[in-house]
Image 1 (cartoon, rainbow, N blue to C red):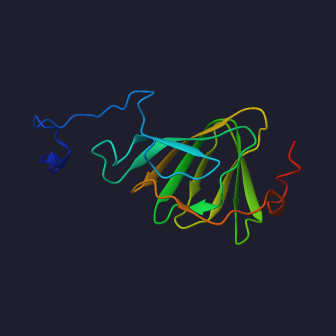
Image 2: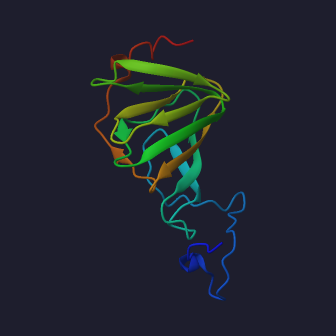
Length: 153
């Protein structure tokens, strides 16, 4: 069986090998939003990846991101730890809640706000996007405009 040419991923020595980003050496040189911290484990910025961004997103206790979208990127997320909420809709009037072990797909161009429902513990997501971690920050909205946000336990 003839495999496609993947020489574009070759090292300087000409070998095509898996590329490991060691824990603690992830790249912070990636799109960011106030209220959320993103680090890349696999990205075009620091690995040979061309069509994939895979990283960790964290929200501190009680914090939320500013409204944003991810342009053309399809986004997949997994709640690694914590309790999450994503606001969406024309005026962010709708939301979905997630718990540890839940998966989410966010379509391209969808404005949303990522929130940590827990006022005492951090929220950690594992997130992947194609082709890259595109982050387009939008004008913020006051907490009071996000239904049920200020009243959460």
